[in-house]
Length: 401
Image (cartoon, rainbow, N blue to C red; front, side, top):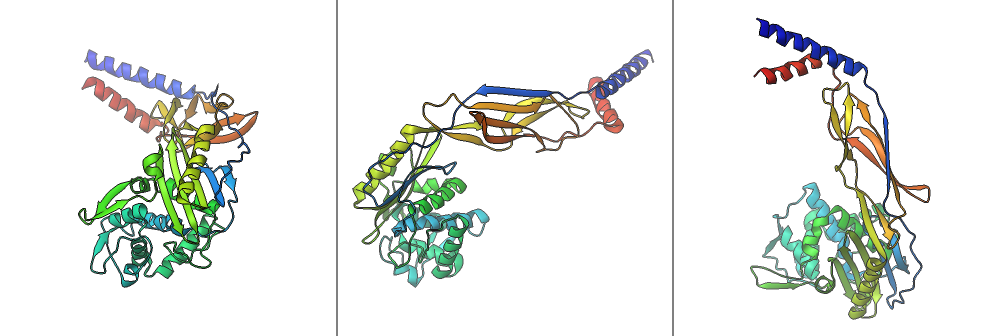
């Protein structure tokens, strides 16, 4: 009997202390800053390119690092297929198709000229095999077969290409076909190619599983594929993306590469030769990697700190970053960014999962250049007599067990 009375007395004391603690809870402010990195402006340079048009952008931010006649409307040749591949990847992402779906070859697809793998109307390839043939060998027949399968006809697919181009702000672009063979009025610009290339790489990063293949085979090893983009083999960090050439378009290339978290896209249009196409794309990429860096300050869902919770069924909650946050920098200016975190020492329940708790701001020369929200990782319900007794009951149950 005496033991039970002791337990009851202890229970009452703990309950009283808990109520006092809740009533005396307070909220404070926590501000933290440190020097990290700086953002810089793009220097004006002349890379003395022989190509008619060119552009270099940073993939994450889309910032233009270099451009030369970037809005001139030119024939894209097979770089057209960046948009065709984008639509295929979006169909995969939406569940409209799967990589294992078998795609038939129509009479129209089998009669395509230019780059091809000689599809036969009696055969079917999977979407995975089609993507490999399009990305590595720039197969026109496979591109048309996919277009007809997805939208019923090449014309309907091309309409979707143009609609998607408008959505991406590709104002210099008119697509007349899905493969890039010369056709009057089928034009785009280096700037627009960079836009669709960026969308493909950012929204569908798994495409690099195909665009980084240098050599492979199809049809049980009977058909050999060799990537038309020679930078895949020779340039460090190359991730793609697509070549294109015809007698009228001359030599085009959308080249992408990543080194040390910096991802770049270089577009070359109407180069006088294939060698110049690759050398000038490499010159653009080298310029980017030699002069810029990308620093990621915050990683989505990473924990910044644990915050005290008052009047809640839990005593704490993790404060996490809502989104990724990073900055494009000029090399040598890494110590000019001030990072300021505004976050309370303690927060009163109830708290919802995803609720904004504070912000992280990045400042340069007194100006805010970016902000990321800090949110609650989990829900914390407000304590009340019912939840309090439940919490205490389970606490004592564990003690007495």
